[in-house]
Length: 596
Image (cartoon, rainbow, N blue to C red):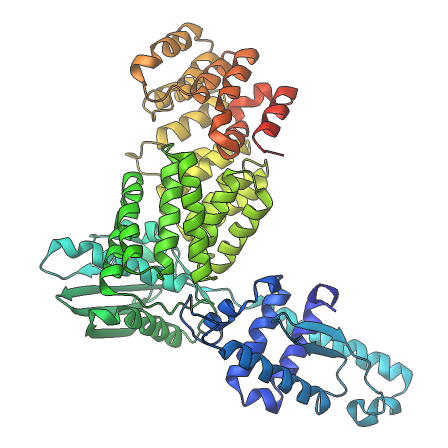
């Protein structure tokens, strides 16, 4: 019997009974093994239970360890089978459920057992009248249900923000190192159970600014703040850190680490453990135990620093990620970062077709080396979406979110590159709301949320979201102008769109909808000179849609086939193209690019 055929509450109640028995309670390692595989199967991930995953998550092996040379998982599985058999031959003899681990695999089975009523509960059940038996059974079920509800309900994760560590080095060039360490600490916290960490973009909004714990806590909506400094001197490293409780500005914990540079991973792990212990949490199942050379890690941190400097920086990070991999071909995070950088560069329109194989290869290698690296799953989700493999893409995105629920980037990519193209607009709104919670000060999150709200027809909500972006962001005026145009407020929309980004088609659309055809025609005629690098079908489709020219709008949309299903599908959800919705040619166009 599979987990899907047995109520989850029943399986989990029985699992706790087994784990509390003497044979398991005295063996923490075996208990951890059983709990892990049972929970993975209950969560629908039994097919992922391979030696590589179990070795890393249960037995602390390095990602990418050679299972042919290390038989730990196979040996412990044999011991687990024997221990389960002993349990069901002794104290579990009367249990109504049995957990089995079939030979040759690691996916547990949950099957019903029909215990001998004369042995169950020492024969006491026989002496209960039928009415009392019914009452006892009902009470037991009620207590089990209440207990399970309380166990699942919890109190929610504790929220924490990691502020950029101050670079104390005399060399300003080491700024990338301090920023990179901060980013890695955020990543480490993001995969710990019981902690909701704010994303890097929001934390770095306070870089170089005076710290006011209450104000930062209010803006980021967090319970705790971690702040500190980094000093790198040659091959020596000093990290000072302090955990502050926001509500009363009370320092709960502080630590100082003076170690060789080669111990940087150990410092990060020790820091995570210290925080978790201070907050009385349990270390999550996603902890990483990486090891790599100082040189490879240095290139990796340089790449991460470039990633955080905008679009051009993310594209430029490809080189340092490749350098890190050249120096350590087993360092999974470098492959994941490389795959994400390829995603950004292909989004920008350069080398899209040529980069797809490289993007997929890097993402798959990251997952092969570390099956629980969320960034690798997210990058692979993007790759599958680009070629219209929607089911595989969604599985990867959801797995990435499950592994790192704090990643605003993954949630934004999922919303705008899969849910929106497929027309699942309400789901996209929910994902963007979660992204905004994790990264409340990110301009990109607010802008993309604004675009999703426009697709949902929630124009005033879109205005409110886009207004949260700083005034110097190039996309803010475009977002606001589009929303005002949909509200029919063209006197507000047109000035905004005149100062928006390179997408001149939105301005032409607004001119057309406002009845200013001459200005729309002139903008289209001047576009080759004014916008020589932005003359695609999308811009002209917007312009003709504003003029109400359905035939020309369709003709221009058909020019967009080469952009692939993600870009075309997302654009078709925008309100500017209401004119052509329901047209059979749109359905044919969607089918042509692999959209349902």
